[in-house]
Amino acid sequence: MSALHPREALYDPQEPAARALPVCDHYAGVEARMRKSLQLQAELGPVFDVTLDNEDGAPVGGEIERAHLIRELLDSPDNRHGRVGVRLLPLGHRAFADVAGIVLRAAQPPAYLMLPKARGLAEIERGAQALDAIGAAAVPLHALVETHGALREVFAIAAHPRIESLSFGLMDFVSAHRGAIPASAMGAAGQFDHPLIVRAKLEIAAACHAAGKTPSHCVFTDIHDTDALQAAAEMAGRLLGYTRMWSIHPSQIRTIVEAFAPTVDEVDDAIAILQAAQAASWGPVQHAGKLHDRASYRYWWQLLERAERTSFHGAPQLPAEVRAAWFT
Image (cartoon, rainbow, N blue to C red; front, side):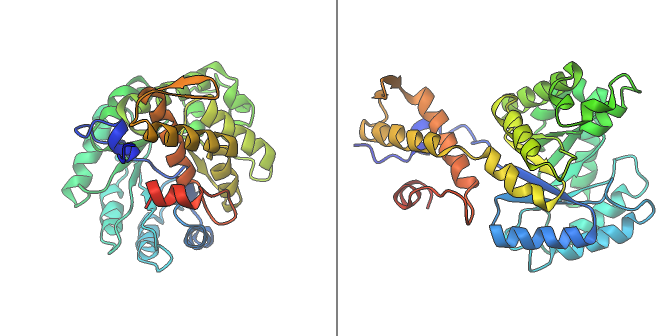
């Protein structure tokens, strides 16, 4: 029996592993909800990120004051997992550098910085250079694809070495079409039916996977329809290839995390296949009448990693012996 850990057996040690992010990215732009979100993260653990919003969620003219609040929250005792990011102002905003500088002076640096409304690769590069010049070189960058230019260059943007994740900005993307896309395309069903929206989502997901980055699905605005949210999250994850999704209300977080988690049957299959593979020194094995080898082992291992990332109190947990063998 090979004692090799799955990561050792299944991946080239010379190839850097893609960073796996929490499956939910929760945006908070109102102070009370910012604080509540941090408290919920402290309670549930880092199964979701919190993004403190200093762009669309900030009052116009109050960006500097909001930046000081964000700095205070980054250094709050509730930020105990270090998974709090910040959405900055657009690069062309007069207060871009001031806001970024204030945020970066926090003792606990942001987990990432989100760049909104980029119009293409050149703007991403200018944003990265500007942030690196004021001390953000070690902070991963996320970007919103919500303009025609960014979508046109999405593969190059995803491949940029400073980019960790790309998100689809549904509302701004619809608005950029000057009324040619109906408002229904921003709703529960329409955003999965309209060809221009589906095309954009698929391009972003494909670009991210090609570059080893994380594609993050857009907002779901009906905060009271839990069933529709769950259906949208499952559609994003199982049909469109997204491995992360935005939340815009604390009530959405658990639903999104649970929707992106593997099923109990999937986890049971993954454990059985991988344990058999390890016993066979990672050579081919049969399971339930199907042949598996290292190509499929990587899939099942990634599924188990996602199961571990989506485990929180009250949710299904990996068996203790599996966690002890492979995740501690």
